[in-house]
Length: 458
Image 1 (spheres, rainbow, N blue to C red):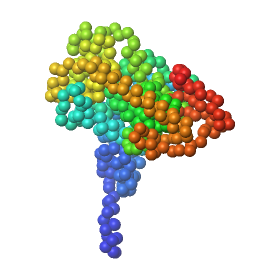
Image 2 (cartoon, rainbow, N blue to C red):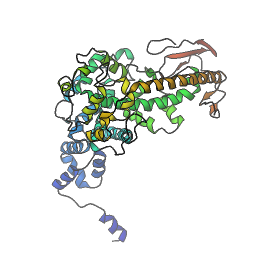
Image 3 (tube, rainbow, N blue to C red):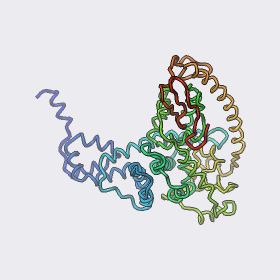
Image 4 (cartoon, rainbow, N blue to C red):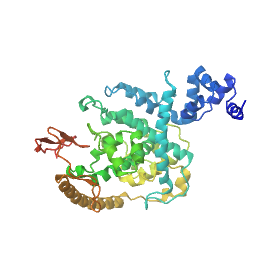
């Protein structure tokens, strides 16, 4: 026997007793590791198929913990709901979250791997967002150099799963026309989803929604600022343009987040066709705000408020989130329970995820947060930006009419593509967020009427 054969033979794992193989498999930290381990030795492969459900359950608990498992399972199951429309299965799934998590009988390795993939997207955004704990936006709250604790990360991860759950429950399918997708009213969505969680838990997952909204806004506005076609048709910064993209969920948003070039972002944004979605999240929250509340927060104390609001859906041993929520909302004049538009800058710090120890280190309870100064500054900046945008659109419209397409900026027109032909006869041009805009016949524009998909004619 050659030395090479000896080396190869020494790398083969010895045959293990079934009990030992089972014990090892049950200690694996996640589904991808389990899959890889099964391919290393026959003992693991056969050991897994002897009791697959027990092993998959153990690995799910290892990966998510009993604390996160209800949200993780519900999120995955919601992604497989029927696309026939919004039906009672969504309500049943949400009700099932309140019970001890049960792994479906038909659960397979493929399901575990798919759920782990969702987890990878969650972990990516949780790690990115956690940097806000140590580098908060300037002049909002004091800086704290301590990195996020395990409990703060767990809250962030849970909030991201709940965002994804909301997406999976209430986004509209691109495969069905809008008239077949009458989603539950905001009152029903509030009752079924928002009312399930405490105000501070709703503040947590809405914080993640705003964080992801900002991601979409940065990419979308970059294209709206520079693309000739979008400039010609005044595709701009209305929230209605962006809700659809946020509703696509974490997998798509992860692609957008790692898109490093303008062209990559454009390819993700521009090809989207079909109905956009102004009613996805913001109307749900606004509707919840519009409901007349029977409780006025300034009239209660830190102790009596707990008699009037939903408590934490999951066990929360640390009082940090409740303390942060009470500090921020106790004087809200409009009686918002969560997602107050006045507290957007504060939410960007991740304050609602903080442990009580971090709140004390930052002396958060001693600070009076004034959102109105920041709001006025943002409004002035927006006005200045609008003037720049109008000039840019006029210039890009001229370029479009002369046959130019592609990327343009005031100091860089080298990326323009010239000599583009008019649309072919009968072709209707569709742009993200808008209905069909232009119809051409024999090189002549016969219809310039422009319709916002949400009912307003441009």
